[in-house]
Picture (cartoon, rainbow, N blue to C red):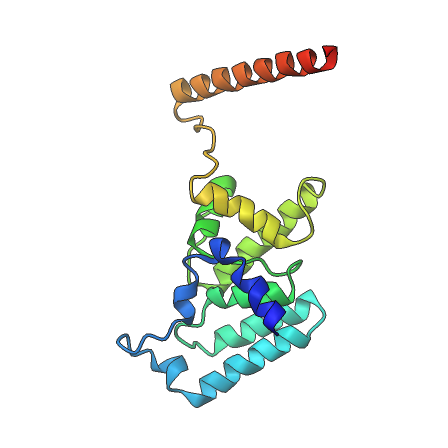
Length: 190
């Protein structure tokens, strides 16, 4: 158990912003999870089901069953726990990942909705299939990429709607390519 907790703690950068869902908030008075024993048991059973299941269909079914209970404060942030159970089937989830997903795919995924999370997850699975040589099977790799885009670590090229900016970006890209080619030739000649 200590190794699992340490492993999760080491991933804090990608989960920044998602931790608030698991912090006790007595001033907010969210009784659905903090004061409702039936909901606590249901959430525990959900986690147990997800830990013990061995198929994608079972995971999605467990998510739908939890969502049907309408437990306030237990939304897709719980997917961060599931990611550690099934990293090839369930991606982590936070604001920057959603923002990056929306930027890359032109989507409009919203936070706090399991349905929106599942749509994003399906898009990430498809993307992983299409780019299998670039990303590992672990959805954390794609989520990390989306996190970097969503937190402005990797700026995207300008859109077609701004031709002057796009042309400047293409010019800069060509210059970098030429510099890389010159550097590569010089390295081969040494």
